[in-house]
Length: 259
Image (tube, rainbow, N blue to C red; front, side):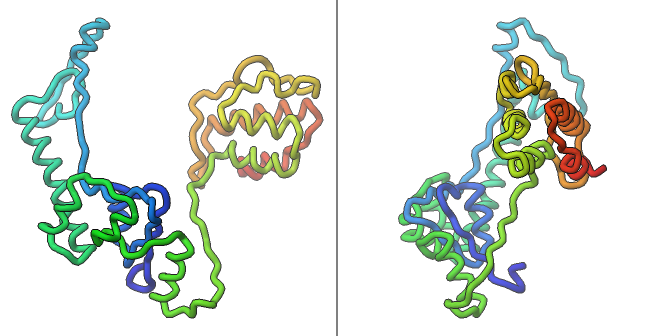
């Protein structure tokens, strides 16, 4: 996309470490005065739970092949060879991060090292150190994109937001809230989607929701192509309970389950 159109990063509350790593590939970076950014560094660690396992009486045995096959095993510390391998891996990742950041900011690695090593900066501090290009919010970033694209400042534009797909149950809850706003079914769906106790949602409405939590099992997300068996089960079960209360949601269910 950057070969055909300008890409401007807009930092809001926090855009540090990985957030900065993504932003530095853009043509320009716009941050707010109090944005938390920078943190050009690498933090990595390994859990060593051997002592804990001894205390609770837990034992495990590993069968492996290869010098570093047990690098991430959690019941012991590193061997000297593993420790050196792990350290060099972290150093390589850090060197790569700093080198890319220096190239992005048109400076040298030596100069960028003064602002790297995991240091965190506000947006105001970052612009003084050359880590961002402009101070402002999303509107300022849009103005910069217009300028870089040769679009007149007064031209009205349409913004499009790309969000992570919601689970099937969450989408159904949203649809139910529109169609059956204020009904027990909508409240039940919303409650289950959030993992809340719905034992009393149907009281006085003829909906037999039962006591305690509805079986949440291992709720999985809707990936945009297929509804998980667990989501299907929950949607169908709630639909049955809605039907017992006299609510017709068959159209929504068919749409959500693609049947």
